[in-house]
Amino acid sequence: MATVRPRDPDRLKRLAAGLSVAVAVLLTILKLVVAVVSGSAALLSSAVDSLADIAASAVTWLSVRIAQQPPDRRHRFGHGKAESLSALAQAAIVAGSALFVLVEAAARLLDPEPLAHRGLAVLVMLVAIAVTLLLLAFQTWVVRVTGSEAIAADALHYRSDLSSNLAVIGSLVLVDRLGLLWVDPLAAVAIAGWLLRGAFRIGRTAVHTLMDHELPAPQRERILAIVRAHPEVVSLHDLRTREAAGTTFIEFHVELDGEMTLRAAHRITEAVEEKLRAAFPDAEIIIHQEPAGLEDARLDHRIQARAGRSA
Picture 1 (tube, rainbow, N blue to C red):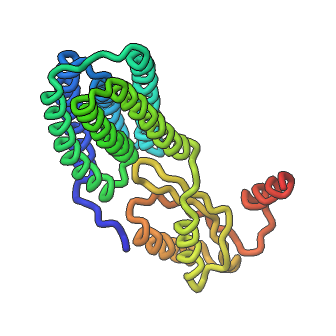
Picture 2 (cartoon, helix red, strand yellow):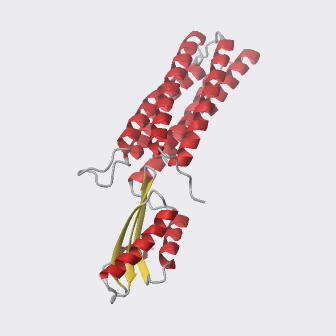
Picture 3 (cartoon, rainbow, N blue to C red):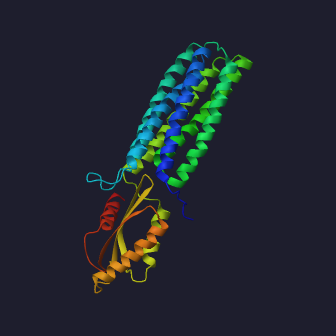
């Protein structure tokens, strides 16, 4: 089933990015204040994570605005990869904050300190969880209807926040009920590990897009089936696909009867393009026409040759 697109997906992306910045600022202020008065390393680690959220969300907001700019003379494919660059920057920010938390947690493990105002700290974390859940619900919907990679990366970061917030609450409760001071810095270590895992996932997805990774096999097979379904298409080759900022790029060579007129060939490719656009509404499609059976240098042949040499 095709994804239903809103009338103004760009506006939704901007709104989601703006809300993300606002939430990050609010949570950072709350957590930093309570971390200072309570002395909790786990809460401090969560505050550092939220501080990183401000930078990451600001990068997301900026990248979304850049990605929405139309093609120009220097960027004829548009600016969609700005979202992937944003995701890569977020991965670096998250990894840096995780390393800071690890250093702080290691110091607290060697020299545990008693915590103060534990009830206030728990209350702040519950507020953080509630606000994060609301933001995530909206971000998840925006990603589903727009396919924004930058918002998806931001949402992944906030999902990791939920786990870290729960870990902080658990550590505070254990310290309060059982007096286990080492649990607090240990929770901070666990949060840092979770952050590093999230950074790796965000970075891997961004690199795939920046390297023009092909669409998944089922989508490529769908494209091939649509093109081959036209009765006047003899064959096709050199299919190349990629995706950036929710836009799918499809390019291939279609093989037609070499005796038909240019006007007839144009009619066929227009019909094929119309079918593809129905299946991929936001696609940029480039079709090269050539006579069937023509012996020429093909990308498919070069890829197969390389695969054979490496086997």
